[in-house]
Image (cartoon, rainbow, N blue to C red; front, side, top):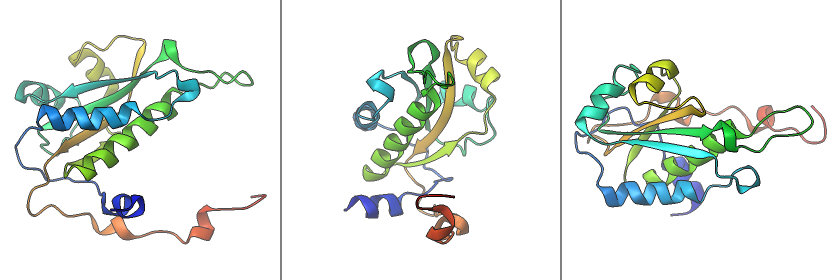
Length: 172
């Protein structure tokens, strides 16, 4: 399948089987995330894998958007290891984590694993529940698993604004 086909095939899965991902599948997803480009290749990303019933039950106290997924990965970045733009002090930690998460979602799709990017989580509850140090910043929660037989994309999945609305050349 071409990259464009893979990108088009991926959708936010909100209905999963109860089967946890096998370690081999998790490893493949993490390997692709590890290949993701990061600012100056500092690789500030940190990923917390939640793949046990106990961990998923704890996760449910941190977000209502867990969709009863059997596996989740919290993509974070280490604030002490990010590249910083000298002009305004902006760091690339969030960008790095987002690029890593995107790579992981597409890898999951290629492997037959469904995922949903969840930003709606309580970072304070997440930090406390999973003992996340202060220098590690949670960015994206990927809930994932094998799609249920009747899983399907939301109706908005295939609706796009005209490309001329989102792309400009030379000036805005």
